[in-house]
Image 1 (cartoon, one colour):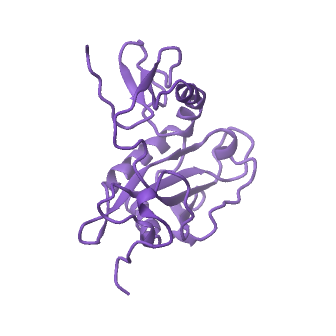
Image 2 (spheres, rainbow, N blue to C red):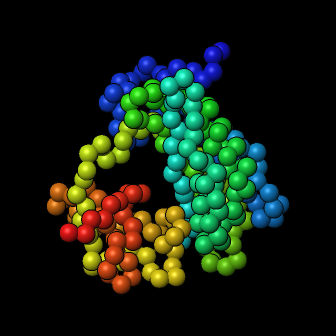
Length: 237
């Protein structure tokens, strides 16, 4: 078998968007506080996960995630963009919400396995498209109380082929001056779900008004501190 394999021909790559596409599977690895170690990464073909309804990750938002991409190169090889930095950021996020911090090498092992086993879903070179990689970490043990932390945690790594999220042209942003995305000395620097869910209603409002993204101000309501995109440009007129 030639590695890496060619992109699958099952759909039109020129029309790839950012919707969920079914791929071959995802990766899971589990952590137990009692044992103090992670299990070997497991390959799972079912995209649905089974956890207890009283897991802290479901009830208290004890979860964090990452987002990175893999791209097919001109020579056909597949490269993942700076995954070590995403591993470190996940450790940073996990430290905010009492989750076990995945070692960098273990994080990379899981990511590489997920990409390798879904290599046919990495888009062709030259389209601007790539494979979006979503590592997701949360408390999966059953526990209703807030203390002590649960014993069971799971790191999942999902992937989907994607196009350019907002296209290749500039988009207008709605500046939110009536909502604080994160509090001073809070979790704003962590990639935790609790930072994102409250923005949904504002994002819906922005969309209905014709704006592509929301732009959030700092604690003094004076300067943009974050947005629903990774990068933005501020021009003083």
